[in-house]
Image 1 (cartoon, helix red, strand yellow):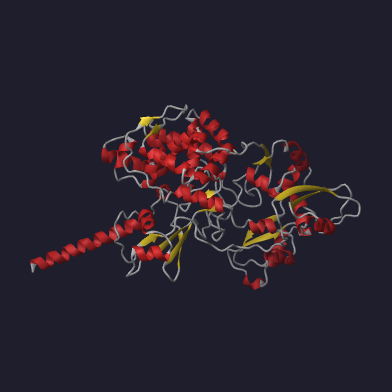
Image 2 (cartoon, rainbow, N blue to C red; image 1 turned 60 degrees about the vertical axis):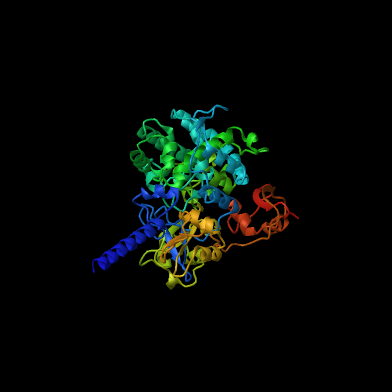
Length: 573
């Protein structure tokens, strides 16, 4: 009898241990998730479970309402927007699912040439990432090197002002590949991949309209302060401060306490740190070594982007980017690129004296034109979130517009079917076509997504690998299974390393078939010209010409007027 009691007790213990390990395995496995785990305000990623057990986990927080502007900054308005090929390549390299550096770093020696202002060491782990970046990841890393030309001069200057190693600027390469719109599945944003709580701690504001974590200058200043605090926390040891930027200082302190050493390479031999923080410092060292001597590692004919330069001007009230572009002589995308923190079509309504960036040489002409612009013409649209009791008639009275204009712009067919929480764009200027704000109701973060699968009875790694067209080795690496083939029903497995195919959200706008790259053309109106004739000559729509030049529907062209057109190189004539 004793024997059977002991047997039942032992089996119960084994069952509970198995459940615990399954639960641990389903926890977030990325180094970025270590950042998110320290943020009490972040909820779990949204999960969609299909009939076949596949979960698609999006980098989004849905239906959260707080801020004074009426929307929480992390609401995902573009869950279904597919990633471009370049961002997909960025995500694949940043996630590093196929990176398998040696566990033992081997002998570590100082790297003296060329000159660094950050202590650079070389060992087997560092050499692995040198070979990886210059080999398998050569194409994507080359893009990162070329992007660095835009941001490094400014970032190095900020670190120099703070009295810190300027080479720390290369951490932005390891974090995001210098992609200012990067948005990880753990909700880390921008070139320095701040999560919301850490961003707030270092004065990076975030709401529905703008996210300062995406601004390369503001985010770099915040990163410098964060790294300086970590450097002080670890008594002036960069080899502990840098990995704690990724894992969180608590993880490093825990490992130090357990293994009774402050040597980062010794800590790597232990099991307390996850793979991502173990690889984080070696990646930085490899990136530094390659970036200082790119030709030596096979990166030739690099076309570095021009350094980021601009002028700033203060705006007293909310202003549409289209208006800013028109008055500065630039195009819409140029203004957006200079101001990556702007997520929508306008500067934030709640921010007075907002500093906007303009192309060099355009500040004076912009200021002169803007001074003569009536306040009511600074913004052509306003966003209204439908509340209980709202009607289109009430909105028309509130904003002084026609009901049919609201219906037309928002494609409202049944006025009784308006749903609470829906965003409506209200056209303050009835001649505005509204295509830009409609397109930017969704934000433009470059999100990464992962797909999960819930294990069923009878499943095996081989079956699951066949189902998702991946290898058993990839499943083991992504889920940290080692060489074990044991999986349990109910267990959640990562089955995708990059964004899953998604459907596009289409905005109804007039389409013109284009061929060739777009270029900006300034057309001088001649006697007898009409918008229709100019549109036919350049293969664009009259509504597009009106939008680009902020013309009303009844505008009369005058000889000598100059019109800005965005034309495909193969479309004229």
